[in-house]
Length: 337
Image (tube, rainbow, N blue to C red; front, side, top):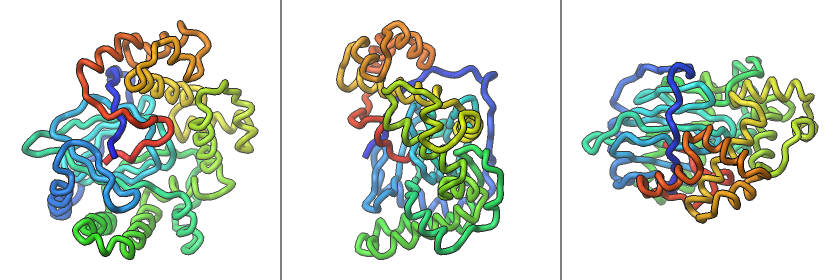
């Protein structure tokens, strides 16, 4: 399964909040993980393994920025380094760091350290909301459940040794496929438990607690993904998730780093790019398909996000890239290892 890839324009660094996370762990477990990933991911790209919801990835050179709507996931850099942008925030992370995304978020990411000799290697696991709720129902609320509700839906922290150990054991199952049906669900639950009892815990708890603001924002982003091409009235969205308009704006911005309108706009424009590249729709038809009634407004907003007009952008991408764009970005995207 390949990640949907897009080139995006660079954002001026002075407008971004840079967050750098230094490595604080031994390289021992990573060498073993890198050896396993390199054997199974012997070409560049992202690969869905024989374990449901478990992905590995390899890149042999620094990449252009990739625009995608990221699933809820846990991702670990095993070798190399990455940069991820959410709104105006930039997260730089590498070996020793893990990323957790707690709800669907439009992001831009790129590989910053990779070579043929030392490729970027990573592993990711989709976070299954129902399994997370089931686990919380069994173990109760871990310490930290009382943290503030207005909490960003993405975070990077140094990976704990217990989380590394569980991830390594999951990777080792790839060499023992007969053990996967019995052991993978147990290790997945252990990884979820380690995340819940880590600094990431409050983020995951917010989406699992049925009446929490975080869970309502989770529902709002799901609704926007399903209805991105429809006209958006924030009042209707607030009513749909059981919040006041002011509360929706406050919590939505706190969790996603953007407003509901900005979130919808990114979904529309990501899908527009895919339609022109894959289905070869003309600019006018594409704008209408993703919800724009005015071709000039579509071209203006597309140029603002991607730095070029729709026609010039697509022509440039066709000349510069060979990418797998067979899947609809707004519907389903694999976690990024």
